[in-house]
Image (cartoon, rainbow, N blue to C red; front, side, top):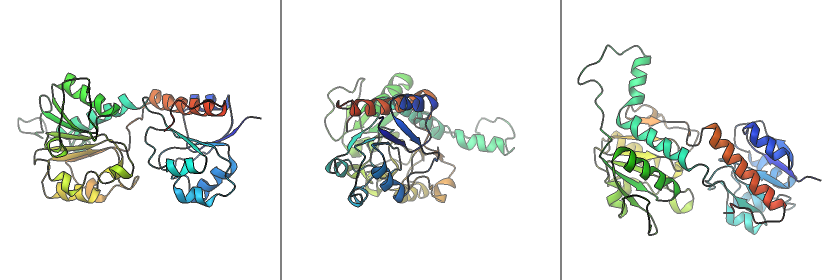
Length: 317
């Protein structure tokens, strides 16, 4: 008898096909996160769950399920701060994720935000679509040059390094970075510095994992180190940034602009951010390419297959 697996969100057909080859799959046809009742039912009724961002398997959920059946949460995505991995393991539930598959796509979105924000691309498109563009002029919509500037990367893991490579080799940027531990080899000319120095770069890109250790890492104190001509980019997790503090700095003109792909209370985006023309806002597009989402899903399926075959999953967290 095949293990019963709940897939909590719509996934590419190729991923579902691969999962159905090994498991008795229940597909939840809904793009919203699991409700509190659904979270508990998932642990009671299925042998394993393939969850994703927003499916909050926290300590209280595990504590509420006395007749727990699920033995693995094979997360779709590299970030798993929505899952309390310590509480899961205490309850006898394995947790896996999908690193590697997301690296290049997320780094590409970081570059998209850097360029869009510096060159006022979103603002320009809105102007044109509103039929308010009256022709080219030498001083029209002057933005900031990107090539040759400095970039401060906060978090020099896989994604941070991929962003650094693009910035250095593609745009000739000076790369400095802050990382909690020493990085022996950044993979390109780059200098490890303290937080204050990294925040003082022309462009600041946040690429740290989510979780309690990085919650509000970007706050009023850290943002004060940015210069007025600096641009702030976040492609990590929304709650890494104290959104109220970021809004205050933008409104006061303490920084030049921001580009965001993630939000503290996603999918809610503060109206104050939406009202600012110097802020680029994307709807969490970091890995939104079919090939990438397929690779992520197939990696999650591989974790499930290994687990139920009695082997250690390749991407255990």
